[in-house]
Length: 236
Image 1 (cartoon, helix red, strand yellow):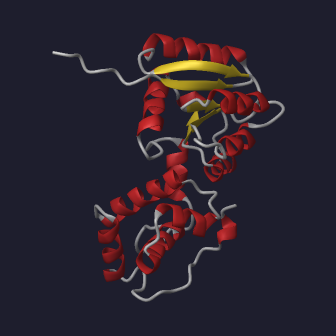
Image 2 (tube, helix red, strand yellow):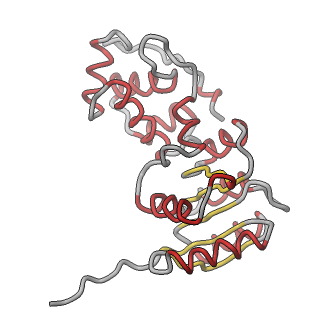
């Protein structure tokens, strides 16, 4: 009986201006996940991180926000223009809304806080980033996505979530269409998928069709086309 072939290891680039952080992460990965991940490069600034990402085409980048020459958010934007674009985890000491929202707008796959990360947790989030289509629940990005926009006292849905339902109901919009409509394409498709999951949970449904039906029945959205309540300029 032939053994099942192991999937190839995912190629990882680590970017942090503190070398000891990257080297510590590299050691943790070698000890705990050598069968899943291979660190192909370490970068000490944003410019180098983008250059190495272009050259090596890693599957995943784990990157700090504050770095010399080019900050992590700017580097993230450049990485997401590449084809194929890598999954990018932001690993930062900053837990304020501004940094997290900037990362979301730039297309981060998740935003992790250094103070909350153990080696085991980081490996788990890395596995999710390269295999799952959603930012992880319980992370800074996941929390912000859930809270983005004003929340309706009646439904618990945010303005953004209600607009997603309207787009799906009246235009049959895909995740890519929704991203383009709400943010000019700056909100990632993964983030739209996360928002859909939050809508399902709040409405107690399991699909987009059920969500739209429930929203119309409860009077949360009109059955007739209406103007979106959100100004696309709010997500830049």
